[in-house]
Length: 264
Image (tube, rainbow, N blue to C red):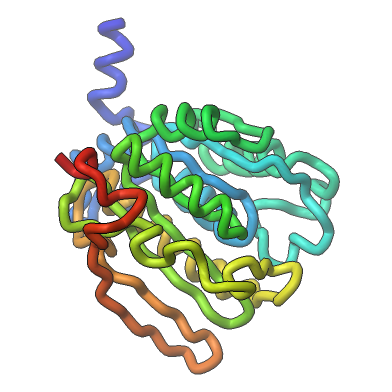
């Protein structure tokens, strides 16, 4: 066990070379890279958002990725879900993504969730990691993931994209001032909240942009540098190439995070 601990407390020569350009960033350095090596992140959804998230976290040296998606790769996915390829059509998205991620970084440790997560399995999956990235495409999953993160006091990086519009925020129940997803969206906004890309369409580079920003926010939280997007909602207008930021406050009456158990 001591050998394992020593390996986790240092970077090998190969790791120092592999991550050298990232280590050169003053805010990350070797200490930040070690934090990434010892981190575990859960990615919920391996579609348009989850693809760049998984690719960048694997390439950046996050030690263990837990991949959750019950779907299989469809030809219509390939326009935007860049972790998959034509040979992956018909395969489990988890298996397809795992193959690609290990080709990028063989040192990566992977945990697979190929079945839909119910309340118990979702709670266990969230409890097993340091951070969760919601890359799903439906409101019900986002609500469930948020509730599990609040209960486990695990930070949640949430992204969404549809048509030519994207959104991004970070919810961190460890902070007393942080809102949760429910504070912001409540029970949804009618039919718009239930729209998916298969119904409304989406442009590939937009989900790539939102997913890349999600990956960046995750690296900031795991390596402990910069200012995470907590209490702020980033709105992306791809049609006009405009970014807008809204301040979001925690709702003391929130039915999910408003209880006494939030952020001790």
